[in-house]
Image (cartoon, rainbow, N blue to C red; front, side):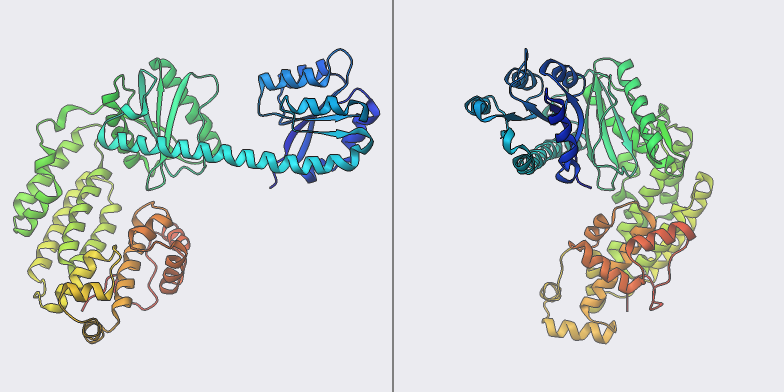
Length: 504
């Protein structure tokens, strides 16, 4: 829809003013007459009450003429454009007005013929000006967003030069708009950016804690009145070094509230239940993978039990976080071994994501661990083809080609192509595409990533090309596939009826 620029018409002759309003097709050109005045002082009062984008004014008026009006307007609102109406006798006077930053002038005897031409030129000028402002704003926001996420990762906020004393992080799940503004009337600053999974991340700062809390509450209420969605907030922090923790707190709240009704959810203080549990050493992905690959089932389950026990006692450490960590461990195992381990990861992830109780979670983990160990015992011998397949499964997200894989295993490309057709029953390209699309379907089922993000995650830089391939395989676009999953709570059947991951 074409933007309409607001216009104030100033003319002391009623018949001329009304003729301008009625004769010119303002909206067709891109303008809307929102106010009119018969004199300079009246026009200035109306402009001060409600500034307009454009002022069309007679240059000669009693007491307060067009030049005086122009100077007063530019002092208050420099971006407003002024067009003068003049007579031939005032021609030099009108040209002089251009030096005071007037946009143009129109001679009265040719008013209706020339004004439309000037308005068309003015509309193009205003559109260019608007575009440049948006570009500048976008670039400024992009830089601030980069610094924001850098601060979240490193804990260093010096580059942002935060003005406020109190800070708080809030996260809006799957933010639907292009811009964010804080409510009017609060002396608070906002820095924001969109995370990889589409959530809006905001850092709000203010001089005092009460102002900050009221500002966020007001913002949340206004957002929830217009949108369906969840807002989570970390604790209010009085030191820059604590901002990172406020973000983690907001994200933990988002993990547990993703199925909750729309609203704002504040982080609750975490108790000290985890103080004696060394998360970095005892619950790291590498450590847990080593326990599994070393067949140390009892030690693995003991670590899981300890962690779950701590999480159940602590407020603020939620089951979703625990499940995601377990999925990361299984994903690492799948990357290492591929084949049946990849299929096990796929089936286990669906079971884990639907589990909402710690007690049930532990029983499920015991079952999955037994399946993992059985799969390890049944891993096929590392012959040449199996090594190649494992490599493709572990690296399909990268930009790999037949020639790259052939060179890695000291084979010729034609020979490797023949191996795929003989052992897998399809070409290398088809196998790579199947791995990517299977993983894409999995991400559509288990994450809230955007389609563009999922395409990138599985190795496609062209979102449209990815969507075409996905549609051919699953007989549904990525968006339709996700919608059906959400609606039915089950996975669509692939058109060829094969297992989710390829193999020999």
